[in-house]
Image (tube, rainbow, N blue to C red; front, top):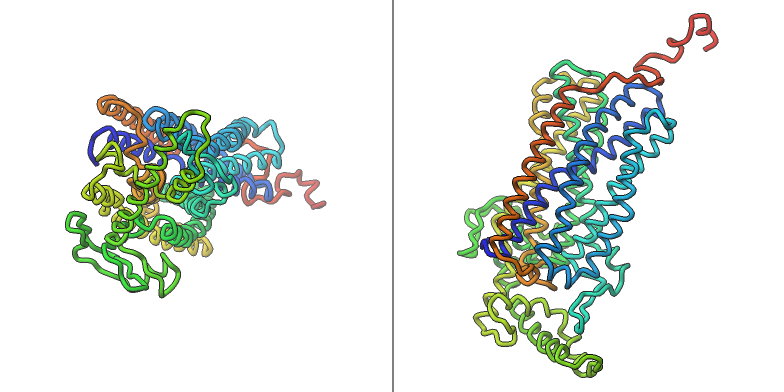
Length: 532
């Protein structure tokens, strides 16, 4: 990445997004786990489940507060660093963000307060409903954010107004039901559930190793193991759906993930290992697994997945078509205000408008894309290839960890069913040391999703190089360093608060519900026990 205004702006947004995504998945998963635990408390009346809900709720609250503080900055960056992006697609992109703020975040933030301060002021059932509403709001918030992000990956339901140079919503129904959004949402929230499950599993394992809070730890591990097994399985299954969606809408991303330079006969093999060389346009020491990539990407044995070299040639054709759209656009823009667009000119623009974004790829090389040379076109076509090596390795780290999570949670699920969770101390230690791994997998997934669509801010519509604000590189560098410093402090604060809460453990609960494993009759006077 060149450290010019574009590279620095990309780096700043990437850093803030990766920092923010340290908090998001744990919030998503813990909210559901809290709701499950409190539901069991309401159904059984056992105080241990209330104690579990309050303890893990404290950790949820710490993480939620830090997640909100880091997420707000990201939205401001659209105006600070990506002002032309905001102008060009703000009418489309702003809608789901506004809905997220008005509906999902409002719901989430409101009921979070009731969750923490309503234990003694509400009935058990009412408080349980509040906890489920917190979980619902948290996941709704992710839904609308991912709808907005998915539109950047697959811009459906919108078209460019050539007179205002703004994308306008053509069908909000298509934006809402974007197939990429559906795959991205379920895959991302499942990853969040896995993060939370491994977190609860690891902390509980630490308690068992220390001989502390054993009842809480065993029950927490039982819930986390079953929840985590289901979540990790769904991550893998839904990851297959994401691969299929990528082949449908982002072919270059899929080929770059595979470091597939040449189009292979169908069904394409999966490259399990290798060293991509972008300069030489080859992958050294590649180890292939036959058919796997073809089945994931096309779900057939006869459909080819185009290689990078073929896609670059296709990009050249799109750029040439985009030049015609750019020519028609400039003629439309030259018309005097109020003059209707001639039918022939409107038809010429509509016929080629789908490739206008490819013409804009020429902007870093020439002011007027219509004046581009064949060399400029070739350079711009190769710009459509993202950084292959980071994508290749991030994807494989993510997938490898995903299968590891399935095995780990399955083992603890089996031990839980056998009531032998503490039978193997080395497994408990493994669970503790595995706590950071789902975060690494989640960050790798985010890298695959976002780095894979470069050089596009909006796939096929708006190149990243055109979307930035007109700022000096020094200004962006200064704010980048400031954000990294502040976010690092927040991470340290988060970890310190979380570790303090974990070391302290759950507070003694003075609720009126029955204590663990004690029948209700044991709390009654002896004279009345016979009636029960």
